[in-house]
Amino acid sequence: MSRKSWSAVDDYIVGSLFEPDAALDAALAANRREGLPEIDVSAAQGKLLHLLARIGGAKTVLEIGTLGGYSTIWLARAVSAGGKVVTLELEPRHAAVARSNIERAGLGDRVDLRVGPALASLSALQAEGAGPFDFIFIDADKPNNPNYLEWAMKLSRPGTVIVCDNVIRDGAVLHTDGRDANVEGARAAFSFIGKDERLDGTAIQTVGAKGYDGFAIAVVK
Image (cartoon, rainbow, N blue to C red; front, side, top):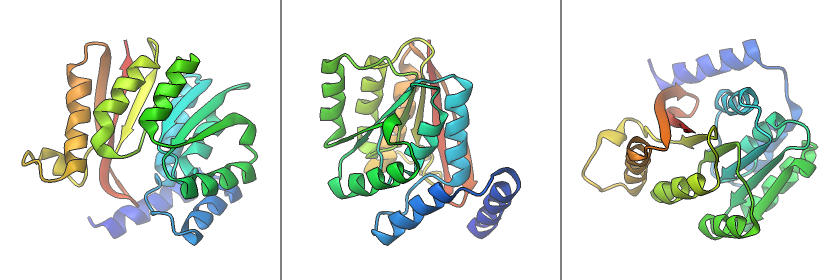
């Protein structure tokens, strides 16, 4: 099968299982119009994140990597009454687009969007006494995966679910030559989750509109 076929199946999934969603469609359109990288999660992946957060009854969510806020909207809709999503974005221009998308979706009161280097924002969150978070989604610069996972552990509790995106990378996660920093970041995520006795995790390969990739999913013991 080809990526064209995978995309067609994704379209079938969305057409069969999802209601039309003007806010999410508008967010993707705004991201394209503003020239943001087209690296948002797919609709099916966004709904998976939404359901995982709902299944766990998450009230507090930490998202590392906002981009244009598409996944943020999915997560903000998942938190229970009075819940909050703290989302971290490096690029001010991306954050401005995300803020507009989130406000348009009617979710501004549920989202705390912080702009700047994620590691600095995470340190600030700890200093503020934020957390523990119930659900953490890591989808930022891949070489920092082990640093983000370390911070996730500091800001979590037993039962926290941690999801790390883009860990298969067209199967390149098998490469050990160290030439691709993003692949090394994916391998570092596997190493961290596999070796940390506080975590119980797995990974799922995915195909679809976003190509061949996957998520690592772990729960804090």
